[in-house]
Image (cartoon, rainbow, N blue to C red; front, side, top):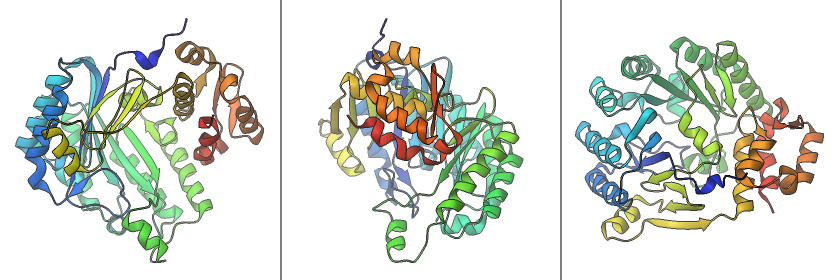
Length: 382
């Protein structure tokens, strides 16, 4: 029996906080830097946008991301948590995550967040090497990471860190040092991301001017594989292309996305998936604020996904997870047989050795992990 899971009421919610001290050269996220004067206006707008829900919606996972949520002042952070947990009360056994910058992780903020049910903090470490942090235009240095992590550890059930590899001039040896430092620190979860040069960022401009250079593709492959080897040997489960977790510390909120489930979202640039419809708010913070406070919709894009498009997306997201996609459950949740959607493309991927097909399960191979982004366009194309 098909469950039409894309119409199941969401049990997850995301809130986007767009404020940062400054914009790092590689960042193309929805954020606004140096405009702390807009924070109070933002808090009013979030409250107004969430009031459109009419009634509170209990959630199993709640995620406040950014930007830098912890850049808000203590009073502003309290107001945000008050508003968000009013509209999204937390179910028993919940996961409530907040992204944080190392310089912002104070005892007062960490305890405040914990008092509202936050039990997972994701810290944007990126590197332990001062030279690399300076190149990435981060505002913290290696010596400040331990203090931030220790503060989070005292108040949170789960602490995650992000790391970037493939920075200009980086060697495999320096990346291995970052990995060793991460293992020494002892987080519950690690996300590793290869540096990308996104159009519209200052790094993209510098790349075009030949002021900085990307690491060689083969070197980046070695770094990615070194991350897998080092972290799995240290007891982390590699459960998604870029994510590693100690037992019982997977990011449950991100698994909502990867499983193709529904979710609420609010804030500038936030995207939600409710009742088969994907909506994305305006990325411009000022446009978002002006529209919401003028009682106008903050939505910039809206798309009702056809059952087939929804199934294709669910397949691609599912294949990012190491366990891959189980045929029977996929058919039960979407109403589609995988061969009906991507039969020829699947055969080609298997013959290339980037996907493994056991008959009941389809998953990425080790080679597939290295080229996964090149596989998905064909799977999504009707």
